[in-house]
Length: 492
Image (cartoon, rainbow, N blue to C red; front, side, top):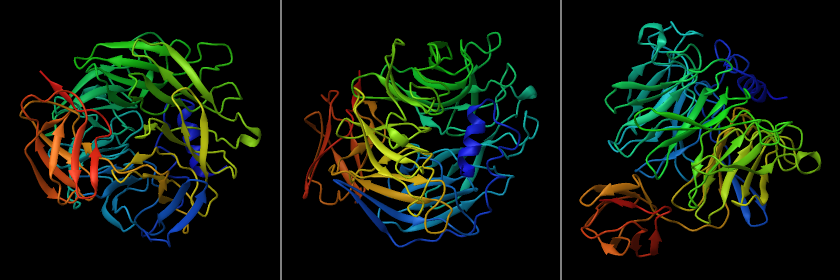
């Protein structure tokens, strides 16, 4: 078993152990080195290795990438670095953590409306009074690499503000950032849900394990998603009625409702121990993964759940001989512009080193790629679909130098545009991300023309026009008309 999977398994079994030992089990990393791009054709799919880590200052990327307004992708590595990479594979190391400003920034980044990229570190920072020491931080970093610590966890007596965040942040419709901590909080070690202003004022909205052991409301939450109804939805890896994790809803004011407790069925065919955030698909339901459970020997599942809490297991992994369909789906899914859901498994596949897959909302799964070591292994993070239509991801190990990779996957989908915020009022300023936007001649919000400015080939700024209604944003360019991947919702 590879070291990464050993450490992730430790997280699945309960509270994260002292010192987050999956780092101590890894080799020390050195300078990021680009490898020769390697293409592997799989029918209509093409996977290309863009970069291989392997030097003093980087390695083990296990967080989802984010596309910024400058057209580049940003990510973090378990071995304490922040990096940027172009869609064609030019990789630049931006920042290296030293412990005082945080350790282990292995969650995804989010670019806020103010232009900064925000993220979390699992340990490190100014405080060491939490359960495992090194309580973690929230930071912001400019696209060019200037980092500022925004918040140090365990700043409150008894660590009631939580400690050790493992998930990325999201920016909500109100402009504040929301996230979770794996540990501490007002009730011991169950973790928290919090909000924080871009300037650094943190409010704890909920502390888990508020109900009797085994924490019927859940423990150790993962990331959040803000739904169309304005509430936040998420998962906990432990706790719940069966101590196998939960799905919950929480209002912006902090009222939490447990929607589902996993392992509700004998043998846990409904899954157990979800480790990643949910996504809300265009049908209004949520989709996610569990790292364990299922009908084929506890290799994990893909599930669908309605906003009211009706859960359906749509796929159980290791359904094929030799688990060629993959095992251990530890990351969040992403819905592509074709309506299908795309994700990764950390293990299994034709070579045992993990897979990339797509699955329909009804549960028909197709394995798109099986990793084999030279092109990486342990793809523990999810995928990101960039505005050029391709998917991008990382592997935590393997590659030309043995310390992980960044890859792209083409499945034949065309370019689109993406609004950095997806809801606003008439008159609101909206950033529109895209590819080859130079020369754009029109921007419309559900057919209503908007005033706009082409800032860069990857960025347009526009104003939501009077009379606009909820619907697709379209940008007319010399290369054709580009539509937004999700509707823009115009608030009254």
